[in-house]
Image (cartoon, rainbow, N blue to C red; front, side):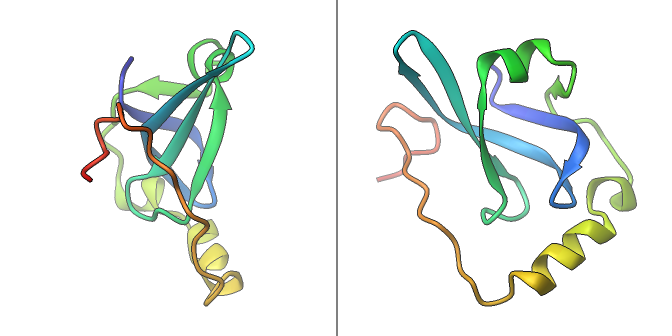
Length: 99
């Protein structure tokens, strides 16, 4: 599975994400995606959403700064200032597990 993804729309103002975990539960596959620029921006998505929705491109698309980091990100950071990050748990078999 491709590890690097670009979202067609911004998520909290950012578009470049890394797939850090893949989990299977009751036959459903879900993925933990984390922003390349800010780990506070992360989401869980399904296989269908990632592969078949048309909302994601495999790999990172070369975008201008104002396309990849939008005003929405600045607003998100000002609203969530000081709230900290939820813990992100990396599976043992993840490429991003460095422990």
